[in-house]
Image (tube, rainbow, N blue to C red):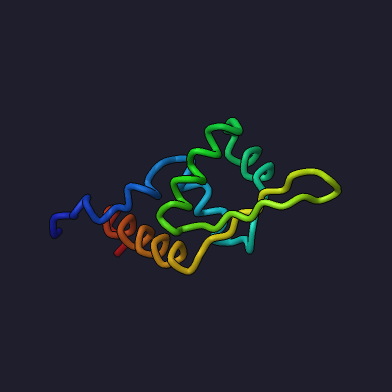
Length: 99
């Protein structure tokens, strides 16, 4: 078996919360902040930090609006995020011997 280059794993994605965000968004058109918070069982502050990091690298877009005077934060995966997530999954498959 050829040596695996651990550097091929995307550090931005390779964390429990950010991986969970990306995995969920890979199958969803969008998700709202409250939905992600409940799904990932994290605090509001913790989720905000992880979303900001994914947004900074261009993997997600965040849209903030108001619905019936209540704030609504919607998160979507960008094309760059989809590409990065696919590459991440490919690297993981190689690591575990499925690629």
